[in-house]
Amino acid sequence: MPDPRLTLALIARIPAAGVATFHAYEEAVLPLLVRHGGVLERRLSTGDRLVEIHVVSFPDAAAFEAYRADPDRAACAPLLVESGAQLELHEVFDVERPGQPCRVEHS
Image (cartoon, rainbow, N blue to C red):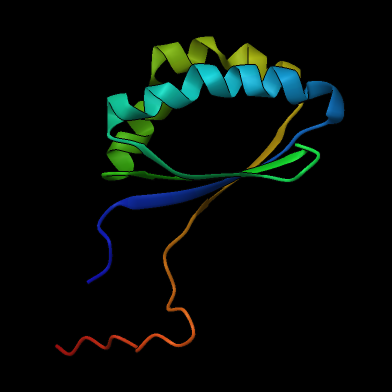
C-alpha cells in the first residue's frame, strides 16, 4: 500500500554570497515543521553548500499548506529572499529498488 503521507523534495540552489543567510532561514523554519506534522526525512548538501535537497513529509496536503501559511514562517521570508536561493519543489514517492521484489496489488 502506498504511503499516505505527502512527501516533497525541495531543491535549493544558493548563490555563494547567500549561503549563511539561507542557513539562518533554515534554522528558523525547519523547527516549525513539527507544528504541522511535518518530518524532515533527509537533508542533503553538496560540498560547496550551494545546493541543498530536503525531503520532507506531511500527513496530507492540508498540513503542508498550514506549514506554508504559518505566520512564524512568513516572518522569516525576508531571509529567504535576501539569500537569493532559487527553489524547486516536487511531490515525490518511493520507487522500487533493484534487487527487491515487486509488489503487485490485485483488486
